[in-house]
Image (cartoon, rainbow, N blue to C red; front, side, top):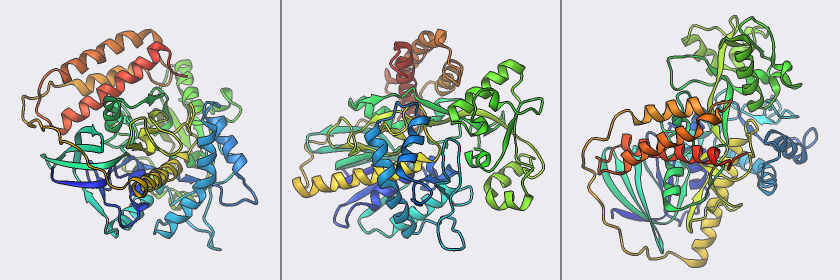
Length: 489
């Protein structure tokens, strides 16, 4: 073993970074980043953070109600209450840590409206809030003497002992071994299980897969959110998001004939929750026999659009679309996971000493559908909670002996079979998209199980490709098993 720590955090999005910042200086922390620190789903988040900061025009009850409505009342109420009531102080704290939010002339934070919210409560940094948050938190973490950062490091195995965990990590292709008393998974989402996603390249569900293989409870993995307005570029697997805030600022959704149609499916029109709008687009696509849909915000002043949405403006320009003059081509694709590693209100999993926070976790906050901009808030609240709970345990029980270190198998072996990841993506995209196809669940599950048998039956060379292929295979299997057995909502 190279080194042991009190805590190892796997993942460096908002949840992983903020967790690290909430440990006192005498707690040793290793923060593992799968690739470079700046690459995470968090950094791609555009809209902002939902929180009640103005109690004159807004209140906790309304935010809780909006969250429950969007989640189809399948949310865990105690988790939602914790999120809404504790979140504002976390948002103000990260502002103090250096995160740059947009401000009004009087110094108060700007607040915008997004679909599903009854009040303007979304604080933001232009249309790149996630990047502003991760950049600010990374800078703060680098100042912490008790936190070590390890970039380009992929966890490829984890073993539980009586006193904690042993992790094996590929660092620039070479194995490293670490031990810890406590471990936090903050590994993000599962977007790469699908052919088209707004998620970053690293979103392969690694933490969920490893937690599952450790025996942790996984809940509602089939609760997957498909964002209605991803830029429709057929050639790109990773699609950039046209933020909810664009509709919040007045963009209208048009079909192939240039007609508004969202109100035909829901009285809230374009500002209905994401699953409702995605469903409307797919149904309208079937009705018109056409996949061409557009967001139109050209009625707004050009200077306003360039100032309010600089990232979206520039990215669309790269694709030949000027949002001040042109309609933006959009179509639903995989965006967010509401299920994950099941945790309690202290972010504890069912495995002693293992915690989860952020998108890989299932707190129960989101219910059947995530309300826009609640995800970054959840990452803050529940990662801080994990750090606080671990700190209490370290104070009470001290540092424990880890026990016997497991034998490490060589990372060498024969090449893994090709095409596994592409097969899984095609299977999920076909069987379990916006309008699922229950008649395909059983066959799809069998196909994924066969891929799992191939991946796990041989001693292949341990590479990032193998680890990620195994992860998305396990995740796909859990999703399809849930839906074929009816263990989902």
